[in-house]
Length: 290
Image 1 (cartoon, rainbow, N blue to C red):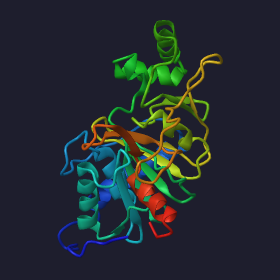
Image 2: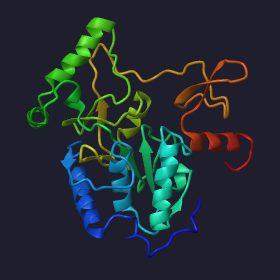
Image 3: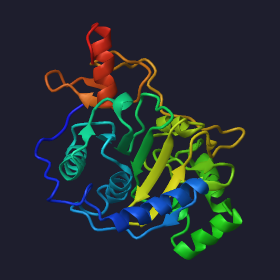
């Protein structure tokens, strides 16, 4: 865990956003929790990062954190990417709170495109950055029409898309951002997480909040909520397979792996997408703290 000594309380309001903005985002978050999977419109604020680079998730994080919180920020599982480092630095320099790379230490985890490998516990909050919150946008471009379809539970076009993939390719071909049904009611976009992570949302102990700054939507999956991928009885949902492969750093065979190229040999190797979990695994195998 670490803190940044450069924090200047007089330079910013705590966590950058003004208190009125935070209250509005918190109210919309409570509504989202009360109606799992429902997209709640909110007045997205301007931030010193470009829209589409995580402003929705960042606004949720800045509105939720307090001085006793510990925050972890990852981008596609990586703690050290440009996006993750920039967002973490903004949080640190405008709030002075502690940050960490250890999932278990964090009270709020903000992520882009991944759910941490380590199982989240009750009381933790996962904030996912979302570029496109509307799962029906693949089949319907009009916002008014998608709202009506959600209200009427008319998801026939989405089912037809799955069926067309089977007819054309012999299987369901949707990859990341695979649509799910939440609380047996709304079809929801889980953000562009890999299919590997979808099942981590089902009946999870933690609260998951989704923020789309450019589209101005917030939605949520409360703890212990059913989150089930769309599938047919004879064509089941399948997650990515890494059978026979292992992480080159920690040796893990049960995590989501990224494919990398060894610069010296040109060989294709694999390593854990979740860098914090990989470091912990490697440290525990050596008998050392991660």
